[in-house]
Structures are given as structure tokens and as C-alpha cells.
Figure (tube, helix red, strand yellow):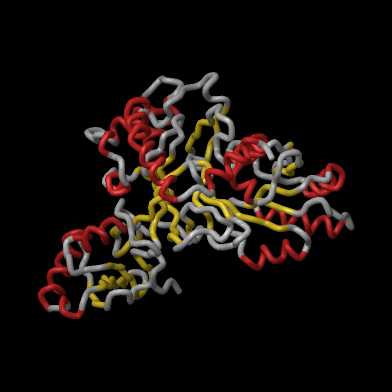
Amino acid sequence: MSDFYSMLIAAEKRPHADRERVQLQALSPQINHAQQKSVAFAEILAGVDAAVVTSRAALASLPVTRKTELLDRQKAAREVSGSRDAVFGGFSSVGFGANMPRVFASPGTIYEPEGKQLDYWRSARALAAAGFKAGELIHNCFSYHFTPAGAMMESGAHALGCTVFPAGTGQTEQQVQAMAELKPAGYVGTPSFLKIILEKAAEMGVALPSVTKALVSGEACPPSLRDWFAERGVTAYQCYATADLGLIAYETSAREGLVIDEGVIVEIVTPGTGDPVAEGEVGELVVTTFNTDYPLIRFGTGDLSAVLPGNCPTGRTNTRIKGWMGRADQTTKIRGMFVHPSQVASIAKRFPDVVKARLVVSGEMANDQMTLHVETTKQAETTELHEKISDAIRDVTKLRGNVAFFAPGSLPNDGRVIEDARSYT
């Protein structure tokens, strides 16, 4: 067992209170670092006293930076600046050279730096949870072109002490041949491509008995597909990672949600806001990373999830999430006007008696009707409150809308703030 692997396991199984204390102690220095070394966060967090951000409540008071803002700042910086580091929009704290071995690109185009630290993207933890060990060969079918996925997994594999075959995507028959001849211990890549490879191997009459495990990501891997892999001798696990943040959470042998990575703080907030939801409620994943090269503070992923209660049966003590549950960006066009989740949240905040709100858009296109469903106590359901909420809808959205009252706990727990129930036929 390598020292690096032992370090991973020790961190995962420490008392949760110890983890929380260490992370909160590191929070203030990280925010100060972001303010001092990142031009973007010097502006975004202007006026924030980093020294007082030592709790989750204090963290929740900071603004959320979403991917759209990151993209906008990158584009703006590239247009007006001649600096070679402007491509990162001021978010990177390091520049080209020895401290940044590679740069990657995601659709948009958003550029991401890669630092030189061991296991920079922190993927080793997910690989270890999937059963990969030092001395094994990994067949890596994530792309090495433009996006960081291939390098992300390779760096984690090297940190674990594994050898990597950089297979990339495509050329299915050659993938099968390489697997048959190199006999890797497992596969890393998207679940759909693993299925294609296994089907091609069966078609070619080639057995792949060495491939017994897989770490998959980049798309959904439902239980039916996981079972399909198992029937063919491959135990597959999922992980959730992004090009901006690296690993966020990973699956374990317990098959009960995804355990949050040790290198980030995750919050679940009401879509369109920075307000944390109650535990178990579905909302947008907001992540703060302790990466000093790319110090993203309260970065909105745009993905929906929810916290699972209790600890993982494997002994890992960090918080678990349910996994990917859809997208948080629910902006909808109604009668020619865009309505945003943040507007719905703004309306609800005006009324202490409103516990939860959900805007439902119905009817047919060009004949839109919108009704704000609100959870309130029976005692609060008055004509006056109805009228005030109706006025607030018009004030905030510039559109007329109806109001419907519901008892607390009645609205779906799916993270939807705006539900488009219109008929498009």
C-alpha cells in the first residue's frame, strides 16, 4: 500500500467534525489568497473581510460565481487585454510557465489551467474507491484532446502508482485489440463508450477477462447499465467532476449516493440564489475549492443534487450527495419576457409566511399562463397576502400571474423553481 493511498484513506475516515474544523480553518486563508492573487476575485469579493469567513454561514454570505460569469470575464479579458494570461479572465492565480504545465478548453470556449501539483484534479480518490491499486494498468478512454478529462484521470492514476494506456476515444476495434493484448485491470471513460467496446469485443469474438473494474463519468450510468456491465464481469463506479473544479464526489461500493471529495466544500442552494436549502432539499451545487492555482470560491456548477443523511456504510465520513439530478438553469421565456429562478426567489423572500415557491407555466405557446405555487400555513392564506404576492409577481417579472396556496411540504422536492408545463404540440 503506497503512502499516497494511505493518506487518501486516512482523510476519508477521520471524524467528520475534524474535517469540518480543518476545512473551515483553511477557508479564510483561501479567500484571502483568492483576493490577493486572482484579479477576478479581487473584484467579486471586494470589501469582504476574509478573516471573518470561518463558518458555513459566513461562506453563504459571499456571492455565487456561475460558469456564465466565468465565461463572460474570460471573453472580456481576451478582447481588451494583451496579457498572455488574460485567457483565464483573471481567475487563475498562476501564469504560463513552469507552474502551469498545460491549458485545456471546454465548450464555450472556457479555458482551464492545470497546475503542477501531484494529483492536481484529485481524481485518485475516485479511482481508489473504484478498486484501482498501485502496479495496475488502466485503459483510459477519456479524451486527451482539448478537454482535461484524459489528463485528469491520468494524473490521479499516476499518483496512485498505476500505469496508463492513453487510449482516448474512437477506433473501437483497436481499443479491443489493445485491451486483449495489454490486459489492463480496468477501464476509465464514459459508460456509453465502455458499452460500445464490450459489444464490439463480443462481435469480434475477443475475450477481455482482465477488465474487471471501471470508473465512469461524463454522462449518466443508470442501474440498468451498471447491471449490464456486471453481467459481463465489469464492476463500474461513477464519479462527478468538472473541468473547472476537478473531482467533486465519487461512488463507493455501498452504492448509496456519492461521497464528497476532501478537497472541496459543497453547498446546496436554491437555484438562482446563493441561499442554502434545508438538508435533503434539492438545489444547485455550489463548490468552493482549496486549489490555490485556480481558487474558485462559491462556484455555481449549474447542476442539481441533494444531501443524503448519515454516513457511507464503507466508513467514509464526509457528506454524501444523491448525484446529478438535472440542471439548475431554469430560465424560461413567458409572453416574450425571460423569467429567471432568481426572480422567483426574490418574490418569495418578500413574504415571511412563504416557505417555498415554484412558478408553473401552463397553457399553450402564445397563450401562456403562470401561477406561483407557494407553501404557507393555513393561517397565512388570506386575500390580502394573495393580492400582495400577485403585485410582487408583476413588480418583479413585469408579467401578471396567479397565486395558488399549498400546505408546507406539498411542492415537489426536485429543485425546480420554474416548471414549464406548456403544451408544445
